[in-house]
Length: 361
Image 1 (cartoon, helix red, strand yellow):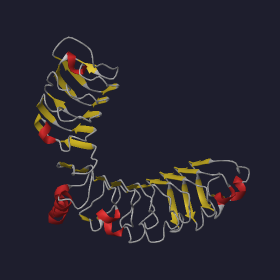
Image 2 (tube, one colour):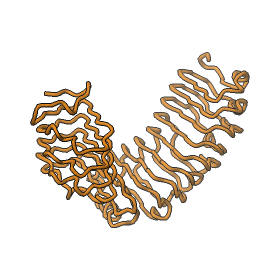
Image 3 (cartoon, one colour):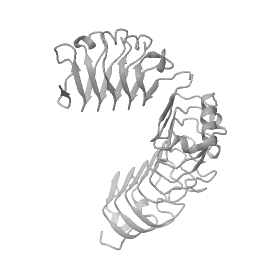
Image 4 (tube, one colour):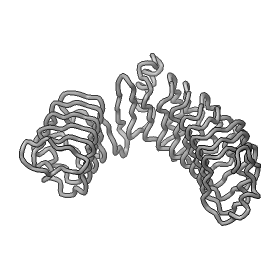
């Protein structure tokens, strides 16, 4: 495509059987309306590192089979607010590092089957009430790295399948949790990595207290900031994940909630002098253990004695000293041990935990 050109349906007339189309490294004056309507089998469209001076109304009109749109690292001069309307089979809409402005009412009308919506670094400051009303089947709402200061669950429609909300990297000081339990009954995770917890003042701390007291049922609720981390797991019917982060002292079972149903335990950005030999005694369902960015001075023999269901251990960017050779003997269902850029020191001779990416000293 020549610089300053116009992409229109005539240029795509010979692609009537194509299912995936990628537009990359182009500079366009405009993309004409109905350009993609001449591709009846098109299911996936990717616009990557492309500059378009004008995105018109009706760009995706009649693209009834389009299931996935990815737009990343692109620049749109004029962006029509109804660009993404009336896409009845769209399941994924991912926009990354591309300015689209605020989310406004009517912007996504007709996208009733959308399951994943991501707007990463899109310059969003405000989310108008009813702007996401079509997303009744949404499972993940990802709005990280924008300019959102206030977020209200009251502005969301009923989303019975919504499991994850990502608001990391936003300057958020106010979150309204009104109707969250009614609108999002399946919500398991709210991610706020990079949000300064202490900058939220009294209103933010009140929000934390409200969530903890059970306004909604979560499997994992984690707040991570440059100053500290808060990790909490509600008494959910089926809580399966828990994270321990930025902790010191002795790692023991008192730090873990919902032990009977826990399947995935993550230990991140911590420094422990030791590990209690009974830490896993009350985790009968544990299947995956992740230790990342953590230093542990010593691990006792028999620490996995009652972890009959443990299948996977991941140790990433960590230093663990005084590890007994027999540490894996009590894991009959272990399928994999993954070590990445970690240092393991043994109390006895042996190399039971070894990979090419692991430095043994």
